[in-house]
Image (cartoon, rainbow, N blue to C red; front, side):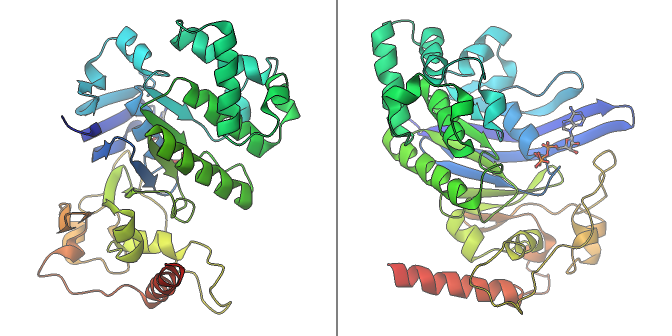
Length: 351
Ligand SMILES: Nc1ncnc2c1ncn2[C@@H]1O[C@H](COP(=O)(O)OP(=O)(O)OP(=O)(O)O)[C@@H](O)[C@H]1O
């Protein structure tokens, strides 16, 4: 028996466009255990959504092409299943939550019915009364006050944060093994974002659902992720436990993402550590390390040869030539180190 739920192996996905073939995902590997939370983080266009859509085989074909790789979910390669088999997995075993809760909800149907509908489709064995009872339990689980009354209301009668809670309730109705949340809180204000993420963490503890969070903001998932995959130009450039990524980051791109996180405790003189330039064109990805032109610590080899994934320890991998034993040692920039020191002392203070 293994507790491995998902394994993505050497995944390559491209899109045929008039301008040429866009290499959106270029050799992605990661795995997820039951009940674990993985955050996939990176700038816009880095391939986060294409990777997560592929897990449900939702990349449109055409223009999308699964060029290479495997997505093993619960022992089966998603990319080799028939349409019927994939349809069975979608919604049943894997559910997805998107950024805008309004697009996921039908404005003309009462909230309660939208939840019981899931039972009608996925759990034909339960009665109408039982479905209603469970829907109300789910509304309670996601923190909706007066769930009996709310059951009879329409989406427009809910605030943005409450709507996203309803969407989570609908996603959970089928008791999925994996929940993929693509920027689920971006449209919400910061306090509500924190509440929704906290809620998802709590639900996870009661249901043992694995979660993949897609976000461009490392700060958002700091308290909920077990593992973090940092994506750049269609590849994972740093991968590890949340502890390693937040407290021992090694890749200059991750430094940039951490440095651009707003930090309420920093003094005003602290300048954000930003990444210069823009991501490469994925129609013709650069030779060597795709991050080199934006990397102030780039080495000559970065422009020639793609770096392998170097192992820092069992919980931490980095795709950068800076990790090579002959590379110069570049310390973490001071501003990032100051933040890490501050977080570390705060965490110790909390303990
Ligand atoms: N249908 C499509 N046709 C052509 N190119 C596409 C298509 N879908 C995605 N791409 C390209 O694939 C690359 C990765 O896109 P993806 O949406 O995965 O990025 P992302 O990291 O999720 O960004 P964002 O945070 O903006 O959603 C981008 O270069 C994008 O333009």
